[in-house]
Image (cartoon, rainbow, N blue to C red; front, top):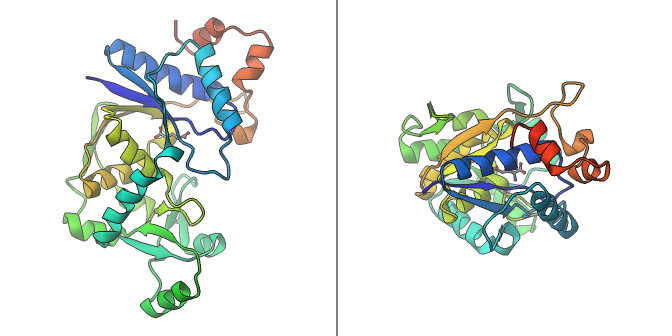
Length: 274
Ligand code: GLU
């Protein structure tokens, strides 16, 4: 059975780009006579707001989407993420990172497309770490690519399909990613991989901005003994200036389109759906 999901973070109002992702995943489920799930990715209490969550449910219903209930809300499932984290810590695959944001930036290289930070700084010395632990300094947990590579005997067996094309994962391109943030206690890649498995997701259908994230997510599936879904990434919508639609670029929200009198049918049509 085909099972897919739309997984927005309630950090702002949805825009056309979200509508495209949601409609693409929904249409894929319908075509495959499968299931469509909604997941609220709200682990980051510093940025997520209940009002945005309510608004997105309203916007998706306005768009004409239907999803199964209950909806999984990540903030209600920290125990699941902590269990996965302990598993990885227990296997010696993570290390503590006490560095500040600035220190991390200094110890990182920019990824080829500039969006992702590639941390290559490694752990502190045992003495330095012991001192900071005693001082009660907060820390993040990072995935040690070196430890992961030793455990798996290399990454060459880590394959997945992206748009039906077989790909060998290159988690090394993303560096030692954070799996538990200092402030939140978990991080995106870990929560997504755990949830995709717990929700029985067979097909991940999402925007091109997350294509590169698949590589480390495939590695985490291997380390946690979780199944690997098939992946499909759709191209992103661009604004008139050629920038991708994003909250930070003030993309027009679905509510604003609605207030201007646009109907859901018009928007679906504009995005290529009936
Ligand atoms: N919550 C993520 C976002 O809003 C999507 C995660 C995913 O689809 O894997 O960008």
